Length: 116
Image (cartoon, rainbow, N blue to C red; front, side):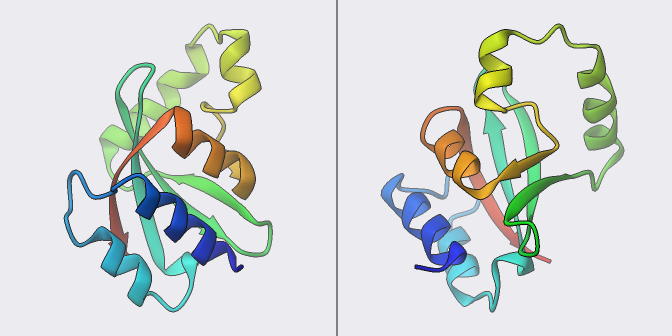
């Protein structure tokens, strides 16, 4: 199963599409996983984060498209990190595919998928 199919199946199982109803169709129509940005909400403090996939590393990395995204990323440097956050990797700027899928099951609430 490809990385795109793994993410698609994970999101489909979660009845995904809270913010943008056509998100699964956007992912399904994308040629590659790199062609989309996934928006999630971190449930520990309801921050909304954007991620884009890097196939060469098989990981998702944080994207900062707006000043608000950039401000959040810079604020996170000052967070006193709970050991559980380190273990889950929910504050990481780069998250390996398997870890990202695990976070979608527990910590990240998927909101939307956008075409790049």
